[in-house]
Structure formats: C-alpha cells, structure tokens
Length: 157
Image (cartoon, rainbow, N blue to C red):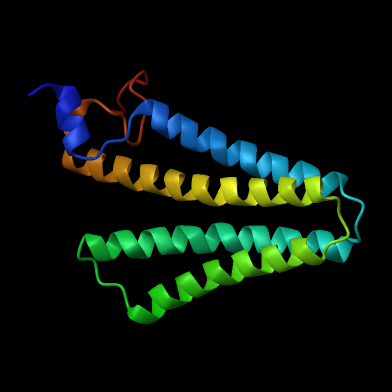
C-alpha cells in the first residue's frame, strides 16, 4: 500500500481540498463583509447582519463537531446537539427574514444570501479538515508532517 493510499484511508484531506476550503471561507466572508461595509443601511442593521453571520458560523461548527463526535462514539449530550441545531436554524431563519424585509435590491439580497451560505458550507469543511489533519497527525507521527515546529528549523538543544 502506498503512502497516498494510507493517507486517504486514515482520512487525511488532500492539500487541494484544504486549500479550496480556506479559499471558499475567505471568499464568502470577504464578499459578505465588503457588501456589508458598502451597504446603505443603519449601523444597527449592519450589526444585526454581522451578529447573524457570526452566529451562523459558530452554530455550523458546533453542529459539525457534535455530529462527528457522535459518529466517533465521543459522548455528546442531546441537549448540546439540539442547541447547536437550533442555533443553526435560528441563524438561517434570521438571515432569511432579515433579507426578506430589507429594503435592498433583489441582487443585493442574493449577494448576502450566497455569501452567507458559502461561508457556512466552507466553515464546516475547514473544521472537518482541521480535525482530520489533527487525527491523522496523532495516528501517523512518522509521516514527516511538522506538528509544532517547522521542519526547516534546527532542533532545540
């Protein structure tokens, strides 16, 4: 079995997928924040959209973590999982209602909606990659992947 096959069996994400996930998150968040910065709305409205965006990201990460923990037989209470799902649905609902009632052009509403959806998807992928890489490094320390110090730095005495 080749090293690449071992990496795929152990769940190590490819560099391309890790990079694409980070680029998608950066692009989605940048698009959302640039649109928010340039929007002609009150500061309270901007604060609302910022808070909903951050709530959505945190809730999406929490759902991903709780679902994966359960799949790996790590104890997760039903209350935590329910709250995580509830907050994700709350963030999606708040964004949908906020955009529905906003006095924005339809294209602007779509712009915010796509930026939000893209960021939610990307943050789940980034969280998955971070966790997969940590698990892979713990299971395969001999692969040469530097965990704490860069490989080009001399060892400390």
